[in-house]
Length: 401
Image 1 (cartoon, rainbow, N blue to C red):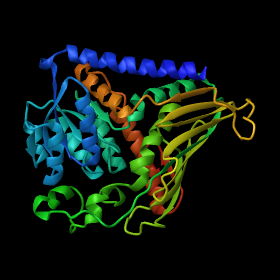
Image 2: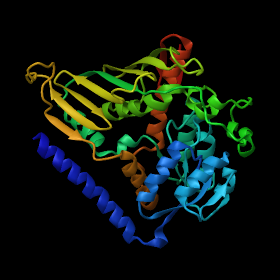
Image 3: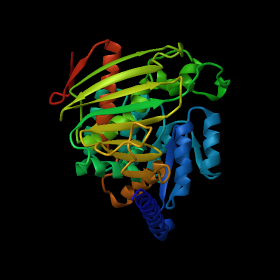
Image 4: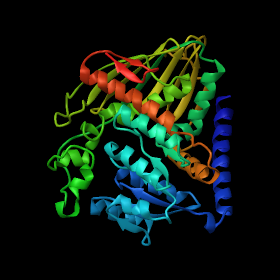
């Protein structure tokens, strides 16, 4: 069963994407979606490379306040793409249908809502907000608009993750009481590449953040400074908490507690090593553990139920029956279901975005689920910084100490 299921699933995945791509090709050049990219750092350039693999779109404009990065993006977009320093000029262009926003988190709300006002569809990276209040404002505005907004939690468009949801919904795990999530990466601070300050508009980069002098660590590793990001809990845990919400049919925890420290990377404000515990309705809890001093095992989730355990990450899915005999010499049985990933789900996620721009259907990672995932991460950060367990009042949409 393992081999047959894996072979069928991989073949079906490739066929489905191939069919969608062929359909897009058949629509012709007149149906091409003209895209602008705002913020051309490493993640945005990765998204651009995915877009180049998908038919029916054209990257016609790129925007960054640091010229060297904009020139790197221009090599991907092509010689005809317009290079722009002020994103508002891009939004003024009626020939642009949609924008990809890959800026630091503190810009996400402003740029997304500005794009909405300009009639553009949006792909915005996660976390969609820098605060809980920002996310609530985004939900209200986007759901009242006619625009398509996809957010960067690509697991929702990734075939083996969809299979994981089917397994959970089938009841094969029985009652689930615990979900462990984890993410391990290796990061360092210091020894930054020189920045040509004549080619960086630092004031514009800061935007809505507090005014402050340029510091290379904040420019290169902004995710780990509170003015611009939220450390690993918003950058990494948001992906996995979105999966928890999705699989378990919940939208918010009851309470959160977290602890973390800068054991190794003293330069950051956000901790390099974190543990968070989240208590949810439906009688289960979830934990997140992570550190930036070791990359072995990378990241994933384990759903533990009375009848079975589901382990899933970006490379594979494995379901184990709790009543199966262990493999001799180990503490686990052979998986009843085992599937390897068919590729990077970002590709199918961006295809879903393009498809929804054409059909005007709701995308897989729409703004409400994106806000809910970011909100849980913000709550965990609030507990971390407060140094105590915090309760969440979902009806009133506020933190209760």
